[in-house]
Image 1 (spheres, rainbow, N blue to C red):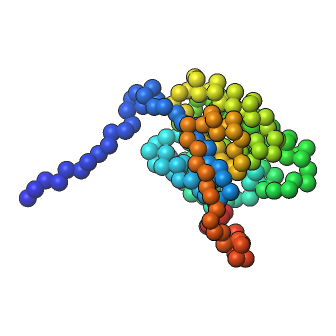
Image 2 (tube, rainbow, N blue to C red; image 1 turned 90 degrees about the vertical axis):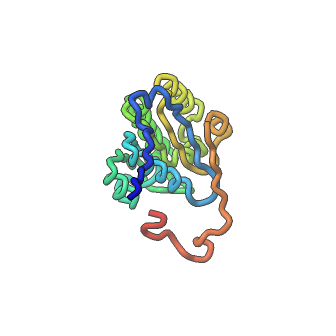
Image 3 (cartoon, rainbow, N blue to C red; image 1 turned 180 degrees about the horizontal axis):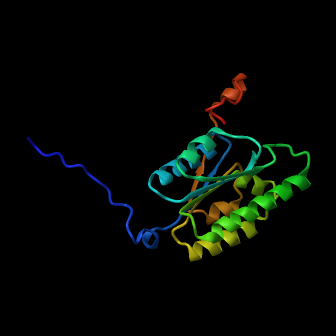
Length: 193
């Protein structure tokens, strides 16, 4: 009988953080899948024992989404901070206040040095709407990346500002080719939320 050898990858080394180059990743574009792609990376990272955090800027803090159920089982820390998703804001002052409060939490998590991966879901919308100053956000991220070179950051949302695109290590643009909404099929549980 021949002995079957199982191939194992020894990726988690004692010097993992020192030899890892943290990436700033941006998922943008008009197509569906920006958050979904970020959640896929969160699942992969959590599965590898990495300490992960998800902060959502626009989804309502009073709602529960499918990703919460799944990611909590994997030990991912989740903060849903928004007042509810809106394309045409009715109260820009409130949206700015919520964005600033959410960014304050982001800064706290960034500076803590407790994480291997942090996802700022929907922050790109907030930057595009100018609810937060992109230069201020990028300065904070740059400062943190200098002291934590292993930290991975993913930012999602449409219309990524050029400054963000230039600062990022990886930018993926989702392009809509066809969407069920245009055929009268609205958001569905387990697919969109």
